[in-house]
Length: 406
Figure 1 (spheres, rainbow, N blue to C red):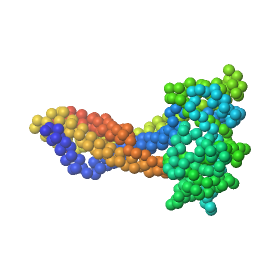
Figure 2: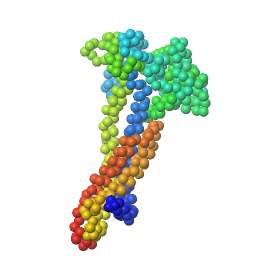
Figure 3: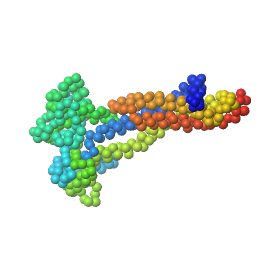
Figure 4: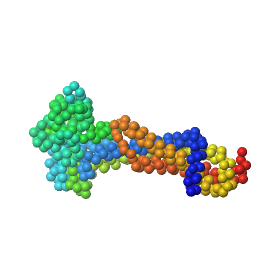
């Protein structure tokens, strides 16, 4: 009963000062919106990256001349490495009994054209047919190329959703011809849409049989790589060690030298990305928190003014039996009502702001439970931290002095 009465008093006090309450609410809303926007946008981007990396699978890894480069110095060092060659494949197959599937892959970028419409710098992937057993190339339409297509060097293409949208919107792409570079290919399948990630479009690609890639782009390829699937997740590390031993022996790497090739898993790439962006994410959250601190200061100032203006009211309430805790709770409730209301509005506004921000790079986000909890925690914490001092000051007023206050 007492709590209910105190809440009604708090609501009445806030309604009596609509402009002041509105400005306080606005300050909190701006702070929570900034925090919610940053947290939701970061989670959305990291979630998209995780989804992109998930196509590799938990028991698979990539072997490449250079798979991870984090600095110019590292690039200059790794570019000196000899490229991996196709003749390493039978050696890996023989020397890695823990490897279940091994696919050969090479990439380049070139112009792709359909009739009078063309896209430049499209990623062209040449791969053996068994890569679909290792990576997620789920078709939305048609099929992926087969071992027979690869063996007979058939000019067939499996395209990403970005090419379907650009060339064949409203049309059935299966069976139509596109020109990859100077060679015509027949579209036999379209991949499921994955969506953009950090400004890159992972749907902007064409996959062709490795034999066709070798015939057309042998001099332009960025380098051959191998996508390997271990027999199980538990044997992943041992499978990597077996592949490493085979390649070090084939490439005559001295025992006291580091590998002249990279072996990476999706988890390792994600961990590296998290390490690189950790300080950036902390800085963004710190900057957004400044607005929240400002909002908290506004709450404290407004509550201090409210205590001063209502000194006589406090004295009257104390004289008729109100205790210190009742006064304390009344003013604390006023602070919490404003901050929680501002927090809820800030969560909604922040979510849509983050959605708009992430939408600029063609990604999507969903309501995040951690972000919502963070927004509510921040708003409640602001109300308690910045409202407790004015509430305590009001509760400690001497009723005699309060009654005589002009």
